[in-house]
Image 1: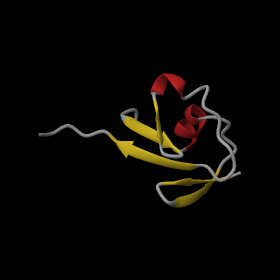
Image 2: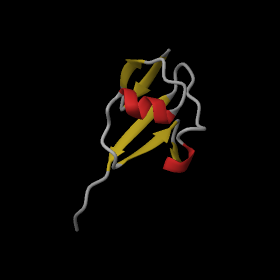
Image 3: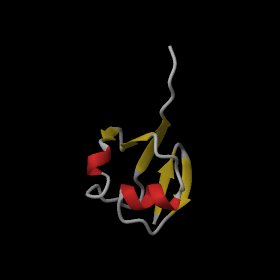
Length: 64
């Protein structure tokens, strides 16, 4: 299926956000918003992906 990650199309066989996180080899400290809704890390394994979904990945940074 094709999903859109930060505006770029990505082909994936990942069924949920946790599998996509592993497939994309993302760092641990990221946040994800699926179709404009922030998804808590505790829900990544139960949040299923569908063709055409739009995902925004936000890298967490410290600072002031």
